[in-house]
Image 1 (tube, one colour):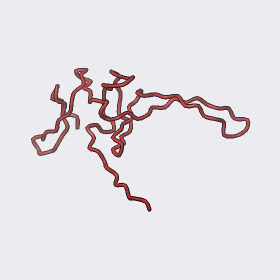
Image 2 (image 1 turned 180 degrees about the vertical axis):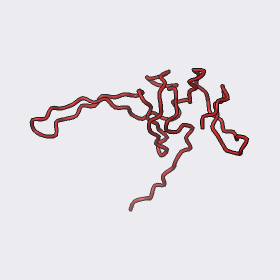
Image 3 (image 1 turned 45 degrees about the horizontal axis):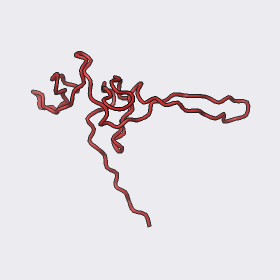
Length: 114
């Protein structure tokens, strides 16, 4: 008998296309763009961060093997939104614009992201 595992989607403070800075781990202080977001595991893929080398065997005879480098996911708690105008990382807060739209805003700079 198998149990149905309910999938929990975590609320993410970053979205695809955001510029973020890594705040923990071997790639600390690197800045890059979020390429992909995984809300189920609360992970993100950041351009140029957590790069791993993968050796690929040849698939057919006569073909040579390859060594490729790929970006792998990092946990979303290890990245912070980054302001390129003022070159500073900041936490995110949510506020409403004059027309009633809910937007994400950087706490340190007051810069609106959305």
